[in-house]
Length: 134
Image 1: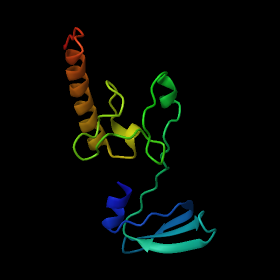
Image 2: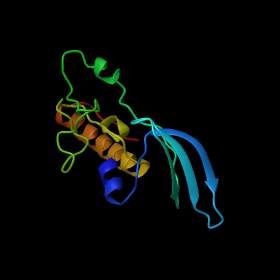
Image 3: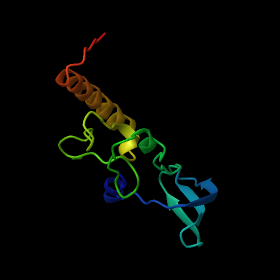
């Protein structure tokens, strides 16, 4: 998501916003302290989105007793293949969806949740569990 956004020309600044003022033309002037290098920056933008960062919940992996679910370098649950099956994990019967696998928007999270639910039902049939769908 981050790389895709950067490729579209979106600029990310990790910092503390001190002031945002609107110019007559509707553009916004943002004064921010860049916390990576401590500098104070002031720049004009046509749109500003303020957002907090997203870190993975490290407690999730503690739920798995005798298996080790694979994580990506940032600590999110790693899907076996982001391209062909983004909800399948390295642990049989465990599926991942939404921000548990990394930052993403709501439509992608909902699509993954649907895919995970379908694959979960398939898995339950595969292991002979009685499945009741209502």
